[in-house]
Image (cartoon, rainbow, N blue to C red; front, side, top):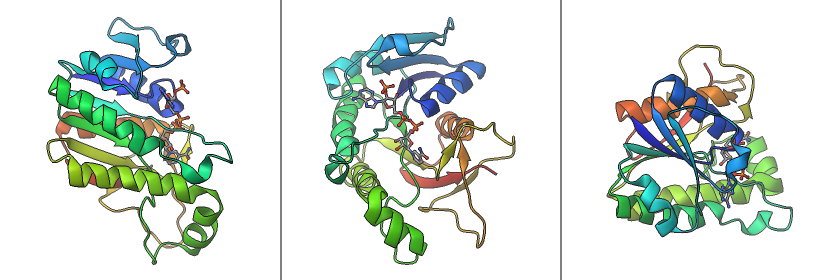
Amino acid sequence: MKIALLGATGPSGLQVVKEALARGHTVTALVRNPEKLTEKHEKLKVVKANIYNADDMAPHFEGQDAVLSCLGTTPSWFSLWTITFYTDTAKPIVEALRKANVTRLVFMTSWYTKYDRSDPFIINWVLKPLFLGPTLHNMGQMEDYFDQECADIAYTSVRPPQLVDTDTSGKPVLAEVAQSIRSPGKRFVCCRRDVARFMLDAAEKREYIRKCVAIASG
Ligand SMILES: NC(=O)c1ccc[n+]([C@@H]2O[C@H](COP(=O)([O-])OP(=O)(O)OC[C@H]3O[C@@H](n4cnc5c(N)ncnc54)[C@H](OP(=O)(O)O)[C@@H]3O)[C@@H](O)[C@H]2O)c1
């Protein structure tokens, strides 16, 4: 496959680069700082592009089988409460996909992007009010945007829980079309390499089209 990747310089993006190249795919990484991506491979092209500008991204999306995104932001304490990064970047990405005639998009969000009163107390009454709420809410708004305004885009929202850099167990990645995977008493995490495996499987097999899917390491 030919894949364009956003967020390739982040820790999850780097795992997608490595896994995609190991699977024999051709990767075009659109980054803001090309020096940061030190990975070298004959099938890896690194280009500088502005993720807020559709015209900048569209030429690099042309001819790709899928676009994958591991974009994310770490807001400061002051900008935390007004975060719009996910919806602000989704719109130019969709515009660029349409200009390039590419319809497949797989992107990362998180567990708990929506409010559900049956979610754990610590999520709804501690972590969301303290600091996670605005980021998760904006991810949820982005998912709504794809659901309600992008009928032409075959998107998959990949929702991991806490990400860890430990290596994968090699077991199949757990996946459920839901906002979390529930198993009483069990605390899930997801290896970033499993995120990469799952995103590439979804792109290759055209699975979970127009679905938001919670994942975790098995
Ligand atoms: N950390 C967790 O436990 C956790 C759990 C669930 C979900 N998530 C979500 O998973 C996603 C990936 O997380 P991560 O920790 O692997 O990566 P990350 O550290 O959030 O990396 C973000 C990537 O986005 C890029 N980026 C951010 N702003 C950009 C801009 N204005 N222009 C161009 N590129 C920009 C960064 O580029 P630079 O390298 O140039 O900064 C980097 O490549 C995020 O959306 C995160 O919120 C994280």
